[in-house]
Image 1 (cartoon, rainbow, N blue to C red):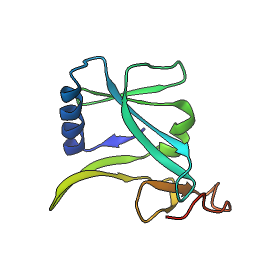
Image 2 (spheres, one colour):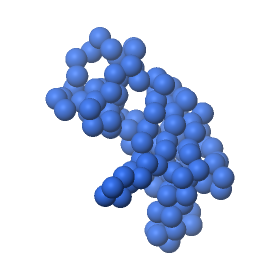
Image 3 (cartoon, helix red, strand yellow):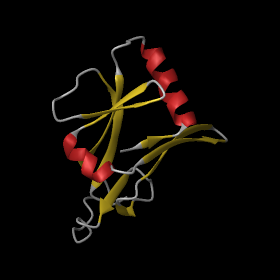
Image 4 (cartoon, rainbow, N blue to C red):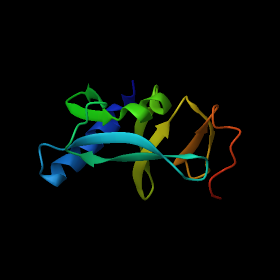
Amino acid sequence: MITISELANEKIKEMLEAEAAPELFLRVGVKEGGCSGFSYNMGFDDAVASTDQEMEFNGLKVVVDGDSMKYLNGLEIDWKEAGMGGGFTITNPNATATCGCGSSFRTATEAGNPAAEPC
């Protein structure tokens, strides 16, 4: 299970509305790569696979592929305002190491592997 803050939920819904495609939903996943071993992947999609896990957060449909869920269980997505705008933040209890940029991570299982590329 993942959690999306109320503010992040509102921002994602605004972005979806701007797409003007009611069939779209938020897809969250991971892919191999990045400074620490895995990179987060968030974007809009319109196709659900049989191995996907579907969730709903206050009217927002979120889909996570089955392979990614083991790395994202307990994940928290939030929105933080900053002086020049704002952005999404991700807190992942499965990550034992993260890159300074915050967009990649490593789990305890992968902790023995060298970083894929420098930050």
